[in-house]
Every structure is written in structure tokens, then in C-alpha cells.
Image 1 (cartoon, rainbow, N blue to C red):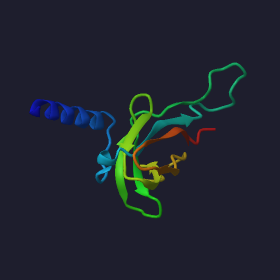
Image 2: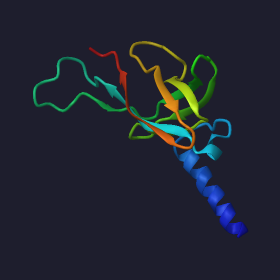
Image 3: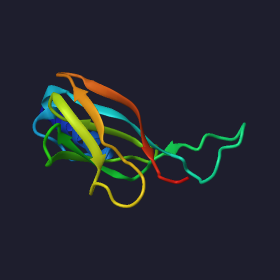
Length: 134
């Protein structure tokens, strides 16, 4: 029985590390948090031609911070994977997601508000960042 408990713990730990998240206070025990995909647009300058591929792509390898609404100190962070996906465990509450380090240079990378309910992973859907490219 002890080896099954150990294996379960390793599986839980590896899934947290896979998404590059910094754990928040005891959220993993409540099963609450949020997940989604972050994309960026436009990906090239100029007008989009009719019939051309959309000028939107996943935003991989970018670190975002999670703050409780109304506070300025991050309680967690995550880095998007190669497909722009992320998953974060946090206690129930209202949060703001912003790019790590705040506003630097051109573009907009949040803030994205999210409300987390107890005992469930909230789907944020696709969060769109603006590259500032025109």
C-alpha cells in the first residue's frame, strides 16, 4: 500500500512540474484552480489578406504571475508550454493574471481576471495578448 501512495505522490508532483507552475497555498488539496491557453496577435505587421491564415499563434514559454484581486504580491506563477497552455492550482477566489515583470515595451499581456470556485478547475478559455505590432 505504501508504494501506491508514493507512486501517487510522484505522479501529482510531476504533473505540477510539467506545467511550470509555482504551487499556491494548499490549493492542490481543494482541487481548485484554472487552466487555459494564451495566444498572441497579430504575429506579423500589416493587413491580413483575405483567405490568409489568421495572424494569431500560441504564446509559448512566457511566465505569468497570479495575484489575488486587489493585491499586488503574486501568490503563484506559471510558464506557458509549447502550445501556450497552462494550469495553476489556487484556492477559490478572484485573481488577476499578468505577464511576469509587468508592463515593459510594446504590447499588452493582461491583466486577465479569473474567478475560481471551490473544488473545480475553471477554464479560462483562450486569453489573447496584443503584440502591439501594426
